[in-house]
Amino acid sequence: MITAPLIDQVQRLMHLWKAGEESKVNEYLDEKGLRRHALFNQLLQALIELAEEGSEERALMEAISNHLAARGLAPKREERLPGMEEKTCLRVGHGGRAAEKHSRDSPGQRPATD
Image (cartoon, rainbow, N blue to C red; front, top):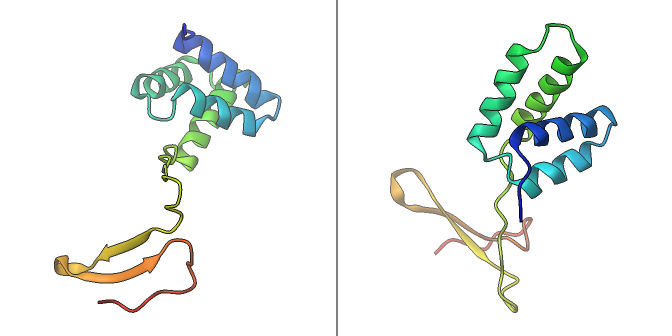
């Protein structure tokens, strides 16, 4: 698969943002892996600084940059094997001791700690 140049990807995001397609912006960012792409963020910042202050182009890029900062990095996908629906988490407290153990599939109920 051939990936479009980063500058073209910025332009695509600008078109989507201008059209009010926030969900498509998010899909595009995730699909292309741009949230974790350091060079993409540097390019976006450089383009913002080069764009004329008060221009629509700059406003769009600033909005996208702010959106990225507000949403943060894309959540890592958690894959589960069939039959492994319940997962027990063990939180480590201060000093390295197990502080709390709970089931992810029943957030309101927490079993007693061992």
